[in-house]
Length: 111
Length: 346
Image 1: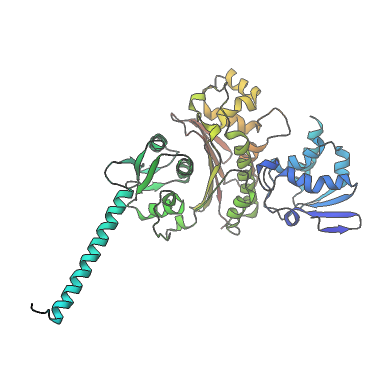
Image 2 (image 1 turned 30 degrees about the vertical axis):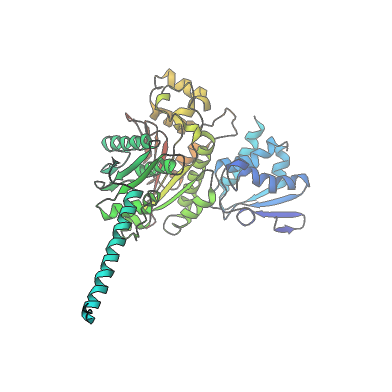
């Protein structure tokens, strides 16, 4: 499931470990929605108090529904934004993706 | 009794064999006629041009689809007559295929066949789009026209990233990578929207409710085409739901109130325009949505030559070269069709 661990830091390559074609928000939306990614990859990391690098490249594209539910959904699941942003380090050739994810985490707080 | 000569015996054998063959052919003809009798078959004439953009062609197409829907629960045989059809556009084709698929794959009393088009290219299009297969016309056709060879179709119910991504992957190298990514995002967000918002009863507050599909909550699914033509990649996706006007009043009450205050409550095109501009969501929760805005605007981040058009019920919205155009037709398509057009790499 989580392929790489360097020291205490795991690396999650979404294209390799989850899918190249993420789509949808909830479990009922399809085979690779944001909620599934959050439950399968992100929440276990937070529960175990570990850290992880999220590699975003290699995926065909990220819809806002997928990203918002995967990362903004962590706030709704009860995790503090500071803990979320402190646990996960994002790597992408498109910096706007990282900004978008951060904004979803911060916006989720404001509701 | 005189015995037959060798030549007479030979002639008798040939005669008998011919007689047997004739009887066999006659039995087959009768059998085929019984399966689909020509007498008592009703004909539904397909339009000459299958398109949604031109008002006259749109009216003819929608009349054809209305006849198709009405035939659904009638016992009997129906032939869809394509003999006069000579042009097909992706926006009209995807809607037709969706309606036909919706009937054939669900409960229906009628039996359908077709009268093939005279135009070879149209025959290839109908074959490539899966229409002939739906109508049980299993004719061996190998598409040869360059416009037709690259038609691709897909159908699903949920937000299917694998199907749409695999389809778009075929254009890798022919379309800029960023544009393919934008298309994938737009298409999958559209699928997610369909799954969440399309197949529910239309809002009671919608002023154009009579133009929404009545039994939308019994429907499911999206239909998708892609085509390379004229230096562009065209991708279209269709659903047979309540349309953007049918869901906006409940999804975004403040925007709906604004539309009413401006006297625009009767214009489906304005529902689309405001929905795009405000990236609405079905509930008031801010964490949902951004879908429609991303569907429309994403493509323009990487290509000024792209175009997007949305047909929803009577409304039409188009964005091209930084300009938007809206229009309201007289008839409703009873659903939503989204069309993306992006340039092929030179």
